[in-house]
Length: 211
Image 1: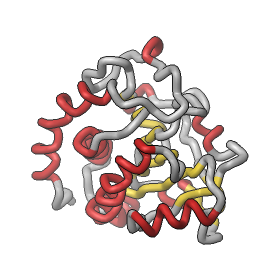
Image 2: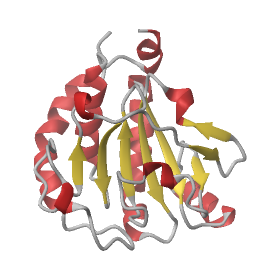
Image 3: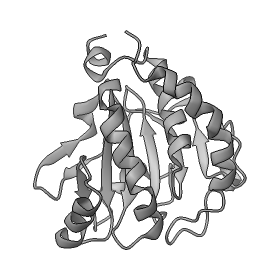
Image 4: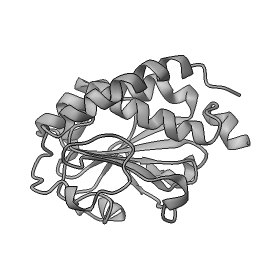
């Protein structure tokens, strides 16, 4: 079953290259090294390696990101196999995190029917600061509290652990398909998500799981 949002994907993809060219100017909070030296085979043009993609045949084993949300719920990406999962690290005082929050909210709201999930990992905040951020931006997706660093450590080797914000896209099998170090432009992230969705036919979440 084809996704209803696919026509928009073509327009987004055409804007992705220009967006990524500008992405190199956006620094992650506290990140001194974007990992440009080890970027190979990336699907988009990037001046400093902030965006990297892995072809389906080159991806490592699935990873599971799990923990307790600020609402007290246990959350695990293992429960979302069959969907494309966008994992984003953030904290309330990080300016790029605040700048990209509306785009992540829109992605979660608009692409859920396509089989896209969004999960936050908060690396710094007490519950009060984190939930205030979530209310301010009307965040519909859960975020895991991770001041210990144990949750984000699951992504070690994919993103620098101190690079916030960072965004990782997991494919339908739970494998890392792409990363963005620093603020993720909406058009760039949409184009990446569209490519990963297309690998499994781009149906809705329920349809993908039943395939």
